[in-house]
Image (cartoon, rainbow over all chains, first blue to last red; front, side):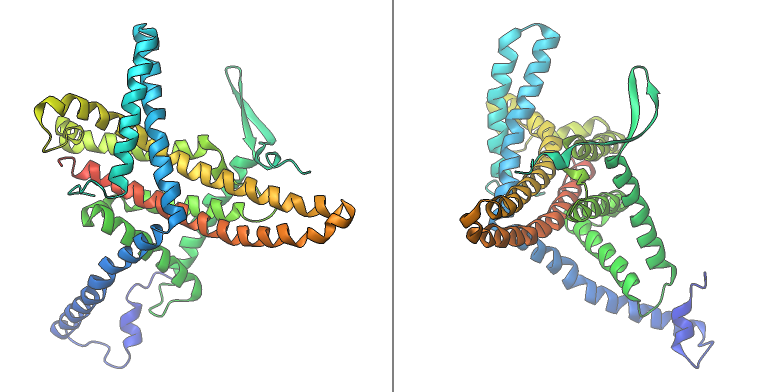
Length: 118
Length: 248
C-alpha cells in the first residue's frame, strides 16, 4: 500500500540507473514542472478572476461589500453607546463612518483604488 | 402555496445534553455537516491512497481540487501563503460540498444559515488577527494606516480602515448566506407556481413557464454554489495575505 516510489518501478527495465543519472532526470523533471506550472500558475487564476467578474457575481460581491460597512459601523457605534453611555452619538457618528467604509470597500474591490497588494 | 421558508427550519434529531438551561441539540444541520466532513475525508483519503502515476478518476478529482485551491492561494497570498493551505482547502471543500448537497431536492442547505457562515468567517478573521500579531507584533497594526495619506486626513482614514476590517467577516458571511438563502427561496417560489397554476383550471396552460424558469434557476444555483465556495476561498487568501504582509 505504502510503496511510494511507484513511478520508478513503472519506468521499466533499468532498475538501478545510478544516482547521478537519476538526479539528472529528477532535475529535468523539476524544470519541466516549473515550465508547466509557471504559465498556468499565473494564467489560470487570471481566468478565474475574469469568470468571477461576470456581472451577477460582481454585483453580489459589491453589494455585500457595501452593506457590510454600515452594519459594522452600526455595531461598533451601538456597542460604544452601550459601554460608554453616550446614547445617540456613537451610533450616529459610527454609522456615517460605516457608510464611508462601505464606499471605500466598494472602491477597493472594484479596483478603483490601485492598492499595491490587491 | 408551499411555504418557501419552511425548508430552512431546523429540526431536532436528538438532544445530547444541557449547558445550563440551553439544550445541546443535534439538528439535521449538524448531521449534514458531520456527513460533509466524513464525505470529504473519504474523498481525499480514497483518492490519494492509490498514488498512481496515471491517476484514476477519483484521484484525478482530488488532484484537480488540490491544484485549484493551491492555485487560488498562490495567486492571492503568494507561495508564503501555502502554510495556510490546509485551512483554505478545508473551508473550500466544506462550503462546496454543503452548497452542492443543498441543491439535491428535499435536502437541507447548511450554508443558508448566517450563524454557520459567520462562524466560518470568524475562523478566518481570528486566524488573520492571531497570526498577524504572532508574526509581526504591534507592527500588524500598520495594516490600519494607509500610506500616502496627508496627516490631517489620517485619523479619519484609520477609523475607516478599522471599520472596513471589522466589516470583512460580515461581508464574507453575508455574501455566502444571502446567495444561498435567496437562491433557494427563489427556486422554491417558482417551483411552487407550477402546482398552483395547474390547480387553477385554465391557468394550467401557463404552468410550463415557471417550470422552465425553475430549470434555468437550478442551473444558475449550481453555478452560484461553486462560485461562492471559490469566492470564499479567494477572499480568505486575500485576507490571509494581509496577515502575512501587513505593511502597505
